[in-house]
Length: 464
Image (spheres, rainbow, N blue to C red):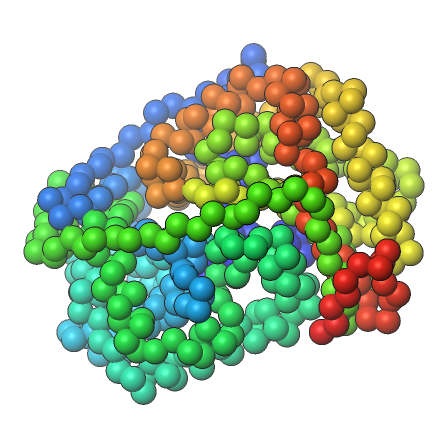
């Protein structure tokens, strides 16, 4: 099983949070006026009396269906002391129910030529089956059974906990960059659940009991906290009838969310983390509002122009001219709670670290002082148009954008609002956003350096 992780994009193969510049939507574009136009995408939506929401994306091109059940619970819903419980519950959901024995779910799906898996993120936990269209009912029946009939065998649960702890050792503790990133986030965030990674802290995972995970399951795995999504060769009315048959008898639950307010950050924070690596990395975290804030598109464009494009200010000045960095990357984590922008710089060596920071700050100030050109904005929009063209080949990508908008902001049309924001964006919007959000007082810097390197400006050092 896999879980969504939030690590360095240019170091890792998979990013958890997808920005609007990486295959945002499916549709046609109008290149003649530089505008991005997306047709209304058709889908069916139903809501059962018990609160279960249903999306059906009907597509009969191939005789296949994907049945997925998205629970509106993830690591952002975890209180202190229970970090990682969402991901641990994801694993537990494959240990059997009162109806199906352990591994029987896999066997049933595999027998018909299908595939199943699950994923945990900041905001949701998703279970899915990819099946021949004739086995649509099987997928719905499996997920309905797991919603209410999960079996908690203490011995099996303890064995699965060890599997998850080993996953944490492999994916974080034995990885220099990921473990450093985890330490950095505890400095950047004081109270927000973004302090901990999705997999949770090792001590918390060890301490989670069968009773606690059962309670978490009973509270959040309820029809009024779930979204059933069916895509492929399935008729909407058939899906609705099957959902009513298998889920209709379940009662809704009272869903209580934790509400944590991150204290306002007014001064720059920094940390030096020494690891067994050959080259240093600089990671900067800037605090941002929630992902549907109207200025977030301008923030993303600012990062494209400043950092990401091959012709960006940082690449042109620090990489090509001064040759003091090997590369740079930046992106925005859009979340239903206040999120952040993440910028990663790779200096050519430890002696260039402070010079790289000064160079970054200088280029940021230049962008704010002199503005951005229409050509720079046009180049970014052109890149978006290109991504849209490729996105047309992957209907699943667009389906997920609709579901993300619904889950995060209760707005399935969020993608259309993002497109409108791009079309209406001005150079002044970008400068204003950069000046407002990319300030030192809102910034936390992590210096990940090879062991044996001297301290950087007397900042706090952390050894592995």
